[in-house]
Figure 1 (tube, helix red, strand yellow):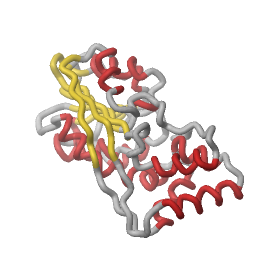
Figure 2: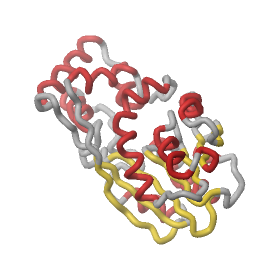
Figure 3: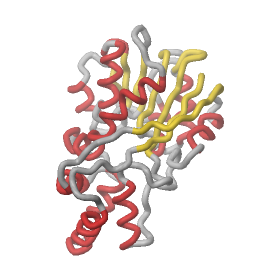
Length: 251
């Protein structure tokens, strides 16, 4: 898996979906003016930018261990950004009214520890919220890619077994982290692709598990996977499923 990529590469690959998800997720978390909010695993800053629109950049913080943090700094000047992992956030206890993690929990080294850290930096009764694409249910934006890859390579290690990727698992993780009044929801967005090439080419940028998997194939296998995806997708324009599991709880 690689997030050692440019902000542009990430935005072309996943930002096209996370950009639509960000306002829906911020609504779910109840983010509103006057709050101080942290974006954990902020990456290139897609959610950070949405949070800044709601509360002002000077009320937003973000943490990410990858070089994508540079893109976030360019996107949201004035935000308090730190290069750090979710499991070791560099802020004191009770620093924020809300802590959010969009499409991040499944990439944490220790998801429960990461959620505990999010709770630690959130004030008592503040909100901790997270969402993860429905990889296990086959309704995430990468699901067709992975389903096609498994047809050609049954041993392909997709994202369906990662933390939070199946129904109910995020809530389990929240409770294990000590959060209370945990609620679950489903967040859905729609992104229309005008051509197959528009959908496919970002997979070639080497971003995340899918990009790393594709990069690991030889040219012949890559072409086979590409053409089978083309065959299985509907005629353009098309909008693949983009559903995420979401959970929120109180610190």
